[in-house]
Length: 193
Image (cartoon, rainbow, N blue to C red; front, top):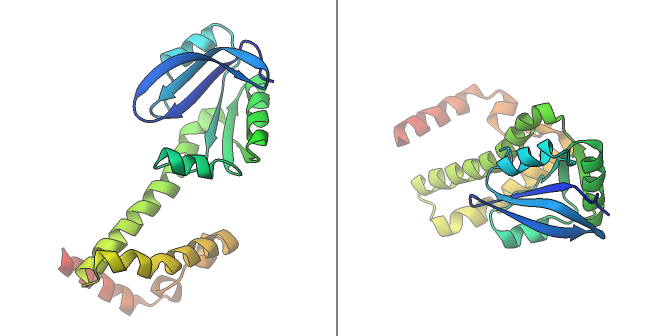
């Protein structure tokens, strides 16, 4: 089980912090902060735990969690980024093992780069889908038809990225060097406002 004097920080939304006592694997954590907010923020509770000499680390699921229910479904088998001292890292590995997940070691000094990469992968994917739907609406496709129409395309593109890597998975006029089609796209986007 976890060390008797460990500090556990769990990050969710919306902003608020609550300190509780919990038990994981038979070992009671004397300080467990449930921090609701940005997972990259260092809370005063975390700073106090560091000052008290407790074991401190981070275990962040590499999973988009737009709703709690989707997070519960996505966590088992997920990849978890882990950083921290040896004791906290060992405890995180136990938790990841319980969730049948995988670990991704991240340099704590570069944690913000990891978190930026996670935000880009999740947030920008949603942003691109939203822009796609907006352009389809300008093209006369109803919102009810647009997302189902592009579902297979989005899935196939994601699967190709995972199987081949981003450069090899790139479809369409950019991969072909088709500058004429690209110019037509730019003109249409400019004209649509």
